[in-house]
Image (cartoon, rainbow, N blue to C red; front, side):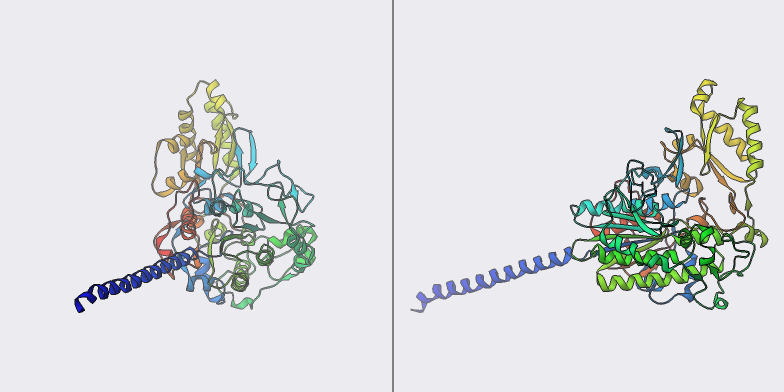
Length: 560
């Protein structure tokens, strides 16, 4: 009897065992599905790119004691700080800077070789974002005739749009048109910039849309821009501004109508003689209205409201205008960064409330840095100076006439590059390589130049470090010139007041790079990173294809 029952008991045991196994397997599959779903949601709802125009890395450390907890300190303390981040090309200007941050490559590939450059095919200077085939939207002026058509590769913002089948939004904002157009890429839903003069409103191009969205029209119709027509006094007691020079000195420029470059700067009384709303750009209020508009865009465009990642690209441009006018050691620049810190804190708080504190990712960097005012350095007995353009031109023209019989062999000199007339060289039965070398050797004899390279050298060599490496990354075979000139360290071609940039020297290349938010580790590194690493790092975080011209590498230490 028991013998007959054993197979039945065994069968029952196997059925029960198999049912548990099947149930366990089913649970395992459900767990995998849940984990996969969670994995898909590890990307942020919103990526935020912030570029601070003309920001040196040492502004973070210099002004650290003046910052609150919600702006720069929040990024540094709770995010990742790349302390040795550099532009790996020259010239270091706004247009190439923004293009390089977002494309992950350099002018050699993306083609934005300067803000303006001599077009060898057209025989005239062109602007990096200008495009007469489109119309202005939001203004009757030509200020909106812009597009990214001169940028020859995709951006990280383009790749995010492609990855999401155009469902993820990209909105780009800056006072400067190029600071919005280039980061927005070719597929932006909207790029907006500030039209000053007597208008004081945000505009765009028909490349993006035929009319402004209602939220932009509402913002323009408000009195926000007008509210910044006020006196610029220091936000804190000026006696606490110990990380900058004296308020009244010979190294700073003036607003038209001022007798001294000192606080307070009375915008209402200076308004008409300084371009009206254009004057706001050269004060920290330009950054404030940019933050206001970016916060309005969060709600107006419903950014970060679903599981499909959106991108908000914001450039704070007033830091550049203030730096150019007053210099990197001025009370004005210190006050501008204290106020920018507060504007960043406002923006981050808005992101916390609208998107969610743990649902967005931010990077902050700059489009270039800047030099101390050379007159100030020289007074401190540091080697520095200014190019004597008139003497240089006279001497060089005499050389051209003696050597080649004509000055017409040079078509254009701009952005520290010289463009030669190849037809004249052929007609003189000369070899281009030899002409380039002869002129380069002549220029090396001039006191202001530290180094000179030829286009032939850029073609023939593969530089891996130092100044020639930086120049080669900025050299575009189709767009760049025949001679590349490097001024002596500390030497600029600029006014005797205010700071500038553009060189391959470290004071123009060393900029901050901070990452914060979802998917970002806390920490820092002093290992060298380059500006072309930003886009692939964000691309890796978002799980999207890298931009089409990318040469950078994801910074693995940054990512969780």
